[in-house]
Image (cartoon, rainbow, N blue to C red):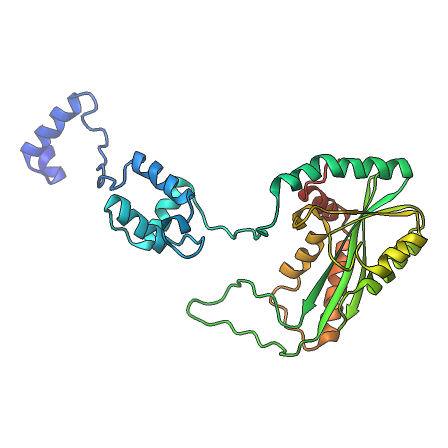
Length: 313
């Protein structure tokens, strides 16, 4: 009767009853799925191969793509995977994701940069504190009418076109992130220039602006560019202003300079994909971005900490 109501054969109903009397007889038994073609030990070996770099396996540059990894797997393990599956495999089983590499000069001495951060910069801060001096991290940058192109959202299959000016007008600027070691305050000063390159004379003009804006002793930390300590006009100005002491960053170590982040923040933020009609519009946008940044001391402090400056703000 029950079998008729359920619409099953009596023999099937008896089999279900026998299974129900057994321990775990009706428990779910999911299908195990296909056997993995790469074992855990092979994946460990694959990661070691990938960490050797793409050039170690005959590729012309240090670029790992899913297609190249698929070739590597086929070469060493004899397993053919589609590149799209390789990307999922790396993410799920190895925890690898896409990254944009940092670019560093071949001439850079990483140990010297770390030594400078650990030894030299604390010395610079101690001496500035004894002198009652503020510290300024000074750098220069430039902005072009041609935009810094960044990824954007758009309908699938639709090409995104940005029409920008082909003129070579530009906005150059000097800026510095400032620290007051005694008051623990972070500030920003900047000096924009339209269609001008920065030379020693412009550096002197900015130093005049800085010392007039905040009179007193200063310690200026900058890179080893020819327009800084090596410039004749800059050396002459420093000789007339003994309250201003200069220090050099380590060679090829821009990441030690908090002011580098001042330029990266607007370029990759407000100015990303910006196509100004003329240099006046570009100038206004740059000034708005820098003024906004000046009003955000917490963000400026994060630039200092990101650069590895050993200062508790």
